[in-house]
Amino acid sequence: MDIETRKEHLDRRINSAARRVGREPSEIKLLAVSKTRSAETIRALAALGQHAFGENYLQEAVDKINQLDDLDLEWHFIGQMQRNKTAAVAENFDWVQSSDRLVIAERLSAPRPANMDELNVCIQMRMSDEAGKGGIAPEALFPLADAINSLPGLVLRGLMTIPENTTEIDRLKRIFRKMNSLYSRLKTRYDTVDTLSMGMTSDFELAIEEGSTMIRVGTALFGPRNHGKSSIR
Image 1 (cartoon, one colour):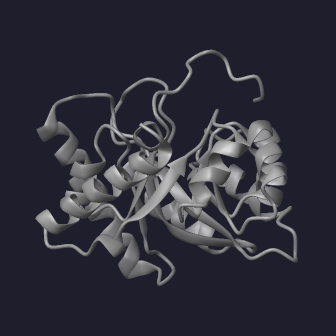
Image 2 (cartoon, helix red, strand yellow):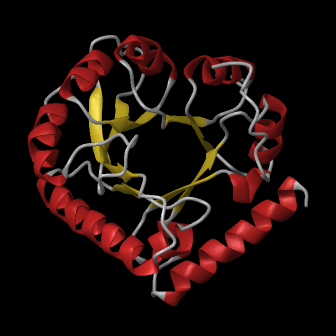
């Protein structure tokens, strides 16, 4: 299946999921997760109208951002954030979806170039005890949100989560509903908040039904990933 056919099929699935719960498909933004994919593949998808791309590996992403700087694309950093990556992320990306510590937010704020728009930030939530997942616990949300909201160069846009790896639909629903509840509370507190980033290839339809405004999809768009080690990290 070529990338155009995959995109058309994915769009139909998004539309159907939204309509099932009385939502407009235009309420859901598609973030194409393009880690390990080539600049040429991203360019092909951009030619089909895809605007927003998500990357996990910093150096790989910066190389692709530079190769594609003739296109008007929106770049999201969605990988786990390390202190030594913050300056480069702040200088190259439009969004950071994986902010989960005040020190990281402060280090993103300081180097943001004055000629760039504010860096859009989502706070990553950890909604289970699964090992290896980033994010903060729900009780830590509002203190961190208050701090991020006060930092120059940043604008708080919402929440992101990577749910635990489970096929239990009821369990996923509980996670997504809890996220939607936290998001609704955050929206009442900050007028910049408009993004609930949840749902990936395996569960995006359920996430849409439970209120997601942004889904992060890789495999359903690009096909199965080569699981060999990426040559650029």
